[in-house]
Length: 385
Image (cartoon, rainbow, N blue to C red; front, side):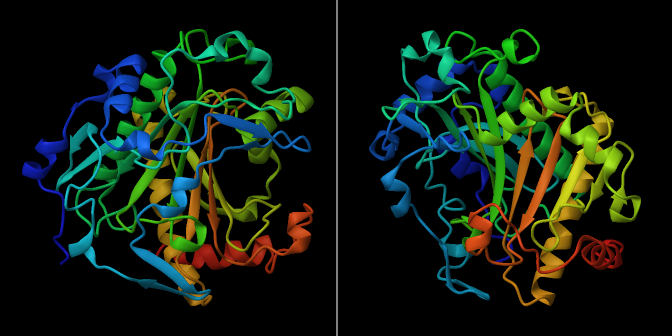
């Protein structure tokens, strides 16, 4: 079933727009509100903030019942309970598609998440409550709203970042950047402006982009994908990046480029570097850092920078897929894009290379390796993957 895929005929049934940049945020909201069934799984329209660290907490009980096509039954083994032939994505049993781009084989596409962590509102009252963006929240909470998308790396079930061509993956990354730009620049009447945080005028809201791979780290669907959430909520890491810039006078990415020991370089690209941070919390954590640390978003990147970031993403994922089984760990990892006000655009690769214990919950990480050893092992692999 290596050729199992969503084909063009199936796509036409669920295709609502071919180019996301031809839609505006209000038009996207309409598509979400009209999506059959999506309203049945919407989250609570409220966020609470942990007063210790300002972390936003969202609630959606329906996400516990979302489809899973793999189940982690053993800490060292992921057991698949269905094959590609049973994939709901390949069968076209999904929400309306709002962006599609051809690849050398198949296509990449973006649709709506049926089990969203945020849901749109037609007339947000949040506009007049800007104090709740980053400051303390009361026990009553504050409105939480936005859009939750899925970007499917390829329509072909078995293809993802580890086995696609660089040219195809550049297309995937460019579609992500176009979605990011469209959301940030067409939502000023609905989302909080970012100008007061030092961002450029005309951008509003927060775009969070992640990749979960493997059930131990939150991956429920095997078909390769990225998640994109656009909301009124400032994630804690964005707050921390902002605070770092204000406290130290440099972007976090710039600081790491200056301070990380040269021997912890995994691979250099024309416009970026892939490194093991000297503060590695779990074995084989990696950072991919754009050399121009004054850029804050994917859509600000040049074609050369997009190419470098894409190559680094592919190397990072290939390395984790190669080294985790050697260490008798499941192939499970998260990739997180750090963008927005306060960035220094950078990308974080977080493998499921050890469990978190009680000390980690206290903020005292005990890493079961050391950065130099981990980097040496990754460098030994990087020319082979």
